Length: 169
Image (cartoon, rainbow, N blue to C red; front, side, top):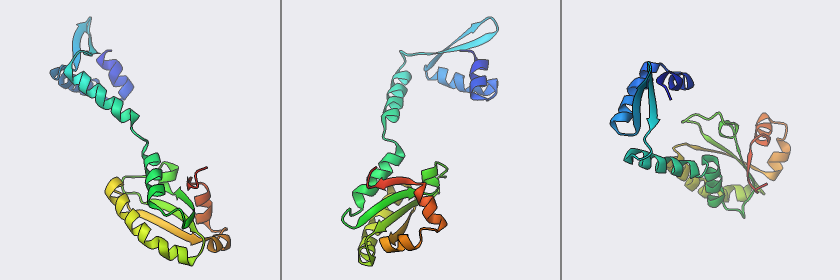
């Protein structure tokens, strides 16, 4: 593929492509040829660099999706006996999160006793989320009675647009 074709696809200057491709050539990752006036590049599939990067790309592409991993983390660390429903909502559920976004979760419990019991689990889960994902957990916990009283609130409509975590649908 020519430098200009690569530049067009990536929407960068052909000089930027040239610099980067020369660095890749120095690692023996690509081979270079001049045909007419065009600089052509081809991946060197026999190179050590290709083998290492190919293996890495394959592992990354087979890795679990971050949202699915988060869902599993939430389900694993929340006491199912206390919770009726868990929904991921906010920017994460919409796909508009930033690196510093909170992990907004909505949790429904049966009563105030269960709400109090849930506190220690949420503290542990908050630490896990911060350690694993680098984001702060922002739980919004309501009892079933509170949900029925607040069903007209905007946050409830946001939750209804969220991703159901538990029970799994």
